[in-house]
Length: 293
Image 1 (cartoon, rainbow, N blue to C red):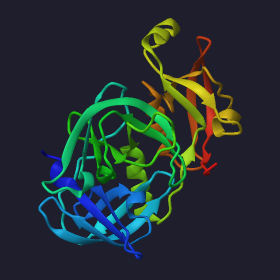
Image 2: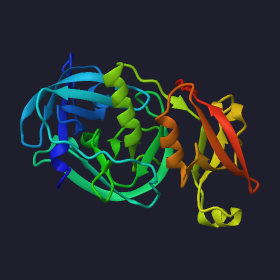
Image 3: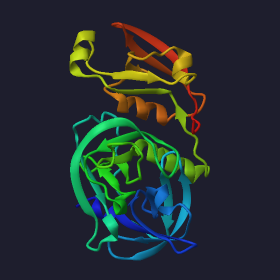
Image 4: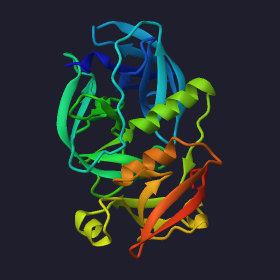
């Protein structure tokens, strides 16, 4: 109930008259709203329906294809959502999706599920692949795209997206951009009008308890794949390494690695400590700008 006033309906119309309906999350009291890029992409007119029923004209501040994030601005004071963090987020935690599905009247709707995976890469039929995504079994219908994925305390942990996916078996799943990434994208769009993404170049998963116990550690991120010529590859990381700390901060799972890296800048050097064959090793990784490829 506390969050619902900060969830808005977004109605976008293209110059050709095509209409798209989605959702948005107000994150600044001066009327700045987070939503999905694909909801407003190519729109010549955007209208936001506030939780109190007001119809407000919105300006597109900026969009980012790599994360499917867009920032809108309405000229009105607005109630805001509490933005949380995905740092420490674990598979199995409760996840609540809030949005305005299909533009139905009666205010935002709520669906409940769990976080079913972290660090997902989703091939997007309408743009570049989306990486580092939260996967949930909470249903996200097209009109809820751009709404909030929330934890059990009511803090926003992701911006939901109901993209058309080409991955077999992904049709019934919901996905969300981690809020730490969405917030960073929004700040860059507001400050510079352009978004630069850094990358490490690994894909991985949370370390299971059995393996953690055998290595004598409490948790970490198991590296499944290291992209050739990526910063991680150049620094010397390998598949089957278990990342335990990044810049001295303990890593409990893959979400911690994602959050720590994605909020840094091009050229930053991060110290990544791994457990390799049961022995700790530390690597200096120089982060680079991530390209579409």
